[in-house]
Length: 376
Image (cartoon, rainbow, N blue to C red):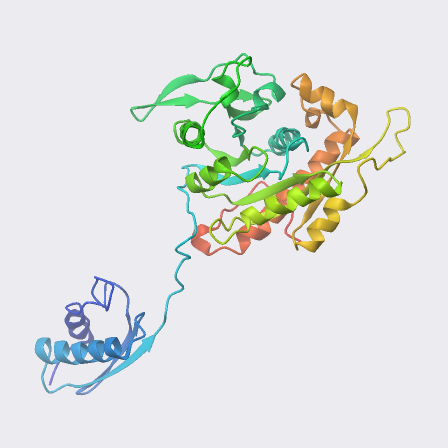
C-alpha cells in the first residue's frame, strides 16, 4: 500500500465542513494528519457541538479516504469541538471610514457643560502633538464648531475623488472641520425630525474627503437621542469622552450619558470623564480656587462607575472669550490653560491606547506618534 499525505489532504477537500459551506481543508478544520504504514490519524476541529455533526464528519472522512485513496487504510478520526464566540446580534455596528484610525465621540448628558469647548480645545491639542485631526460637529440643532474655529463664513468646496463628488472639510489651526453650521442660516432655527438629521449627518461623514486622520472627534448634541444612535449606527466609535460640571444635577445626566454608551446594543468603551468649570480662579488671584459648582463631583462619579477621570478644566473668563472669537485657548503656548487641555488630551490618548491594546490584533489601531502619552 503506497500513498502520500498529500493524497489524504486532497481527499478531505471533497468534504464540506458542518455549517460552513467550505471544505474541511479550505476552512482549516483539519489540524493534523499522521500516517503510519496503512494507518492514518486525522485531527479535525469543528464549530458545531452536536453529536450528529461530530459523527457525520467522522464518517465522511473515513469514506472519502477509502474512496479516493485506498479502501484498506485504517482511518482514525479525532474530532474536537471549538464553539466560536458569536457577536452580540443586538449590537449596533458601523461602517469603517477609510484612512480614519480613531473616532472619538465627545458627549454630555445635558447642555451647557462646555462640551463643544472641550472638543475644540482637545482637537487643537492633538494637532499640536503632531496628530492629523478632524472634527465633525454633530450638534444638529446648535452647531458651534464653525464659530469656535473662526470659519463661520467659509463654505466647503466640492472635490472629485475617484469619480465621486465629495465635500472638502474646512481647515483651521491644523484641524479639518465639517459642521451643519456651514449649510444653515444662522438666523433660522433648524426644525428637523430625526430621520432628516440622521441623513444630514451621514452625508457629512461619508460624503466628505477627510483624507488621512489619526483622530476624528465627533461633537455630539446633549442628551441621549436619535443623533447619538445614528452616529453609532453609521461609524464604529473607538471610544467616548463624557463632559460634566461638578454639581449633582449635571453629574446625574452625565451618568446617563455614560450608561448610553455602555448599553449592550451600543457597547462603546467610555475612555473617561472630563470635569469642566471645576473651579473659578480670578485673574487677580491666580493661586485661589473657588469651587462654585462643588468639588470633585466628576472625579467621584468616574470612581463610582469604574471609568477614568481624564482631568479638570477651570472656569476662567479667557476660555469663554477665546471660544467666542474663534481662537481656542489650547493654541497658546506654555500657559496654565493650554497645559490643562494638553494634560486632559494626553490622558484621553493614554486611555485609548489601553483600550486598543485589548482588542483582537486585526482590529487594533496602532498610534505611533504618542507625544508623551503612555499606557502606564
